[in-house]
Structure formats: structure tokens, C-alpha cells
Length: 268
Image (tube, rainbow, N blue to C red):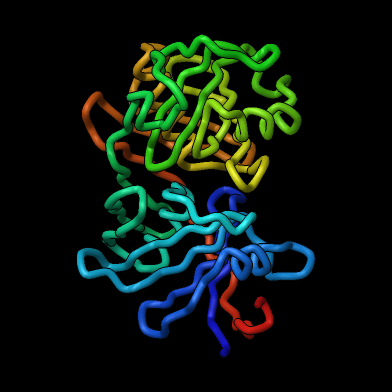
């Protein structure tokens, strides 16, 4: 069976997007992992499968490069809104998402963040504003669930952190029963944050939209920055807005690279 796909990216966080709203596509963990492989597959950080939805323009399923299905991806949401065009509503495991695209600029709204320890989730109760835990020099993080789980460390210099080494240790720590995305951030001023992310099931990424959202809302919650705030990742900037009790807004680019076809059966 030949399947049509779109290669897209948001600030270098890249995706294979398959629109299966009219022609069903069976996706398994092994198949998603094979398609995401950069040496023997198509290559991507995440594979995105669009399915029919009774309550939205599409149902978005997200598979990380390791094949695991996850709840949310901010950059993928922007790419899907761009692909659908104009105003779009998207159903996902992380909740209902909405967005508007104008050219390559896309603004999306994500569900309101959750901060309760069992919503992250954590293995046991603690205050997620300042968690009494640490891994070497990374200590007292905050945590938020913005459709998927994030732990955030505010540090003097994000570039000085050995995130490629510490990221996988924290991601798989028993404190996080669903594993976790690891963010290290530096607040430059009340309007700007620099951020690097170790993404659950992916590794270091050029950009992570939900990481930018989780970091921004945590910084706003702590009184470190104002809303909206620009979060600059290695791939470029995103503008995040949030107020307590509100949904999160995220604005940034979405780029369509090419459209092609592949034999689905060759990926298992």
C-alpha cells in the first residue's frame, strides 16, 4: 500500500505527517519507529497520523522516534494547522487544540496547564513550584503538564548544562512514572527566556513547542517573566502567552518541506 506523506518542521523539530482521514493507515510502534529512523526510514523526530474526528477537523496521533505514542506536541500542532489551512480544530490525546495559520506563521491554543503532582504525573506528592529533588547541579525544578509532562530547571546558563548526559537520566527517573520531558532554561529578562530541551523518546531537539509552553507558564507562575514571553530555542523563537486559569497560546513558524509517497509495507 502506497501512502502519501508530508515532511514538515517547526524550527527544526521535524515530522512525517500522514493524512489518513480518507484512507485508513494502521500505525504500530514498530512501524512508527521504522519510518522515523534517519538511516533506514524516512527520518523524523515524530510521526504524525491524522485520522477522522467527529468533533474536530482531524484527530492527531503523535508517535515519537522510539515508536511510543504521546499526548501532545506543540510544533506538530502548528504544522498540522498549517497543513489543514486557515482556522482548524484538532482532537488529540492531550485535549482539544485550535489554531490559525497565515502564511508560514501559525498561532495555536493548547489546553490550560496542570500543576498538581498527580497530573504531571509524579510518583509521590510534592509541591511542583519547587520540587525538593536534584540531579547533580540541576536542583529544585518546577513541573507542569501542558498536554504532556515537563520538568523545568531554571539555570544561570542553559548552554553550560550537559543535557545530553543528564537528560536521559532524568527522563527515566522513577519519580516520573510516564517518563518526562526535561527543560533547562535561562531567564534573560522579563520578556525573554533561552531554552534547551531533552524530549521524551526523542532526545535533544532543535525546538520543543510544549517545552516552550511549560517553561513559559512556569516562569510566569513564579513571577520571573511577563506574558507574552519570547522563548528562544536552538532552532529559533516562539512567543508564548498565558494567564492563570487560561489556555496557552503559542505563535511561531511551520514549514512544509516536501510531499512524497512511500510503500507502507516496507516499514513492517
